[in-house]
Image (cartoon, rainbow, N blue to C red; front, side):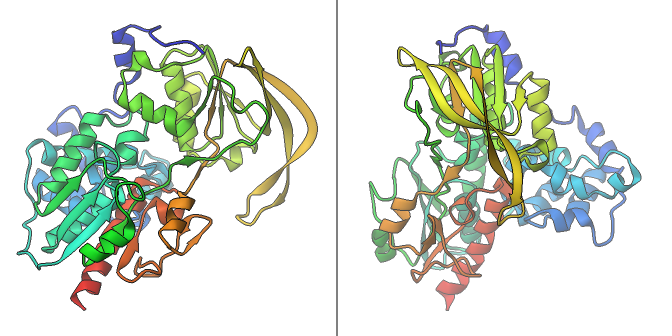
Length: 445
């Protein structure tokens, strides 16, 4: 693995430019909005985890009521601007558009949503009025999508909110864990500032649960607590050579890429990425865009079982990433302490596992991939020790909650990745919104 600085500033700028550019002008957005046939009982609403009234906000764009359109979106999803950039819409709203049945291009819902929400942020439109203070205080741990969503909907109802965030900036996964060509740190910062501009929300940065404060401290000083701590511990491969120089976990790699200049991020000539989820795709494509000559994605199942979407996989293919299906890492070969190659076992698919996916079975055959850098993206595990030490009931580190998002600790609620193990930003936003309603009811009763 070598230090980067192999591309020019112009090349970095081009490689990490917005992959889904916005509409060029107002007329383009209105023309696209007028394609929508405003379905009754619209399937796109049902497929959106936050249930945004999509036909309504599109109709508002078509009639040039952009402010009303943004209000419609933010009413159901205050993270609507982020979701317009990172949601896998091809399997959610756009994937359910009736135009697909007619073999026509679906309405560009995400692009229209981006048009409205970015206008609102750029012009700092205050679309909601905060109710008078209820005299209630809620502590939120984590300024990611779940925590920000919960904070906004609580504050709107007059609750005073304090967010404790371990990083120096808010946004969580949006700021630190998503490919740079999807969202910029500047956009994430603008979004956080826009959300808290409603008032009544105080964010305390560089405050980590279990280190700078304990859960019991929050229980004593606040009327309720919401945990939106996400997940973030990379799953280990547990194979020989895993501690060699040149081994990175995808979470840390993307974090470093998001917090440093592109020219300062080391990247190998030949990179192997293990896994085929969204994080693996982000790691693989960004390694290629940083200047890696070869990137090979290693996945133990076939393309039919991939966790990422077709759109994400196409991005990797168009970037020139190679794929090795039915392959699992077996051993890492190093030379003078540095990665030299990855030995993989050739797999076949056996019986279905508990989730219905067929389990990979080792055939006994092996092959070698020459590489000088390996990025591990084989999944993430929850903060199991932190959660157990906080006396939270959990299942293998995932916080257990009831139908109201309340944990086993009275008045302590949780949502987002820390309860589901890692889903989409839109799922976390919905958890935060619904938890806010439960918290409000809990405090009022």
